[in-house]
Length: 253
Picture (cartoon, rainbow, N blue to C red):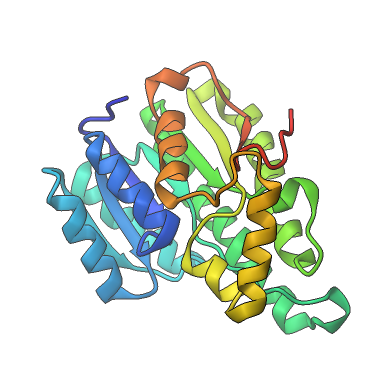
């Protein structure tokens, strides 16, 4: 599933699923720009990418800021001559009963999870149209497909990303630009650990593990493998799709 010589941008690429995606795309031959708010972390991931014999850029960027997104996308295009692959991975979550949330938290999750997707797509798509090809993969979530208590905001923003991805797929197919979404279930990341800390978190993880037919939590690398499939020619006739990576937890058709 090689993407040799193509340029890829991974938002939130400094850790967890984003880092795993950056490394997997590098392993498939792509040059990878790692975007994140933490410059040092982005630099570390970029160094790991370059060890696989490809080019990498470590770019500090708050993807909720349209101006910053426009600047870094231009830097990538100037450096490599094209923007072939966009991975919208940046995201966050807070576990809290809806009635205990406030407008500040609403705005934060909408900005990080949904507005960042809008910003990155809006800036990147013109480059892809000019090149008459492109590949966009969005990180949705099973939570946005089935709903989870305590995650009303997260579920809503992830559902918005996946629905907007389908609409974009219809708009952009004429330009040979494909848009798909990956919807992870529970994955062993820092985000999962922060949502479910301590003894209570251990019990939650055990309960979820029992509910998963494959009886284990997923890994970032397993999500990255599916992203790699979507950006490869092996999925050349797929667009507008949402694929759950959850060990059979939801089995949504």
